[in-house]
Length: 333
Image (cartoon, rainbow, N blue to C red):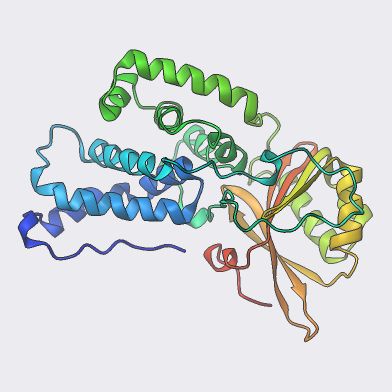
């Protein structure tokens, strides 16, 4: 999934490859995370990052240091992402397209491959260089699928303002300079973005951290129940208001009883699953593998879990085998 930008030879640019690389490379990972938050797609984020570095390299000879290299790169990345968002609809999850299904025994609706679905982000692509626990927790919270999905409801410039101000802690004047606007306009956009996000984004209250022993035990029980096709044991680790969705299938379910009936009737009835742990969007995840007629287990779904003190509160099961290698999961078992 990761594509590294290769800079072409362009002697006319006057750029120094060594100097440019030395100054720009330290910001590559954080810029990728920024582009992903803006675009909701790792593929699109990598394309935007490659375009950003190409533009920066070509313009490096004219870079006079009036701003820092980091600010300059963010300015180019923001412009690139805003252009990519022009005319493109948001990237939703199924729960963003309509209400839940109340009939878990009915066949789910057909896949919608034409919808540009929100994409998960392998944890290995991102991270923070900080050792500050508060910074680490903030980075995790702002990479969660629920937060990325909520950002999709914001217009492009509001999205950029909110990420730069609330996630990356830029000052209003810095954001205004980057966007070529006024501080008052930035503060107004931030206020509107926060108001809309507060109505959409799930609260972080009650979410457990990956190193929480209780979470590890709950995840073990979840995986074991899935492998054993034990619906009762699985329901015991689900929160009362659990949500289950499966892009690119638009049908989704809400509530422990409804989700349990769907899983028992449609997913676990045949058994034969194996679960391999992963980390996606700074959240616990599993690659679920279904056993074929030849006895080989092949990718079925990449399950990204939101875990709270009440249990597993949300599962997004991405039905896309191409996601497995990017998340460090084997192609078969």
